[in-house]
Length: 359
Ligand code: SF4
Image 1: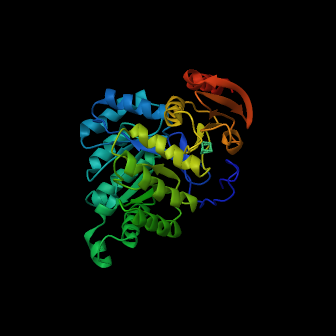
Image 2: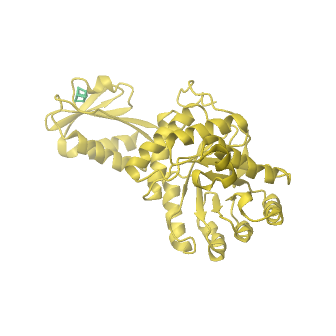
Image 3: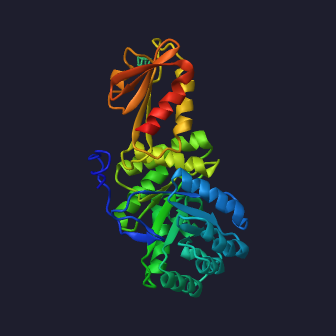
């Protein structure tokens, strides 16, 4: 499945149903998409649009906004006018907010049909979603599993989470609605992995994968990388959300790196840098950080290497398109393993960036 991308023949992606959201698709042969959620007040459409623009610029494919009240649902109308990517309305419990969000132009809604109080309400939401051809994501979290299920399994278990999600889906299916995707997130990485594995065996619906409440940027990045990385390596997952307690733009950077490191997604700079050792005679760590920072928004397929010394650097990074190998107060610029010229320390970052831009 990923075979044509990045020479990756090692991961076989599980084939799921393909659904449409706005002008992109999730599942089937569609590329694994990246999503995030705003943390602005949705009613403040200006601030929300500004944040979504930053997410778009960082490479976010789909954005979700919380809809806690009617004013937020109505604001979707204006938000939609200011953004390019599909928008998901996140609804808890109140079906009227789902109806209003769809009216306002949401491209997808996230709602658990078992939680909105009765079949007539579900029917109303399903009719409207069908009319507008928008999918519904059923999102089960470890905290939201119904009591009768946790009692049956003696606590929150992967089996229970899957059973809960399938139960919600059955309500929609009974109404002939199949435009569904699932998420079943836990804050525990092993529980998340087990739940998605089980779900992937039991269902063909596309899967939105994520580790919920993963934590601050540092810890959350690690938990998400381990959890999502494991699932993606098994071919599970059609769209990803990295949850971080921080700026949502960072979620996009992390998600992109996870997909890139598995060769599932290309685009953007691939960055190689050596750990440095006793041979290094230059402040390589600050150079590497500065270069990485400056290259963040360059969306071009270039492999850049930042190596500590001229003895091993160019050779170790032979597969890089361009790179530097540190010397004493200077660095060698190399392309495809061949040395091009020397650059003094103070000009390293500038010259490297301008060379990359020229490629
Ligand atoms: Fe050490 Fe040079 Fe290898 Fe960096 S590239 S780890 S400095 S030998």
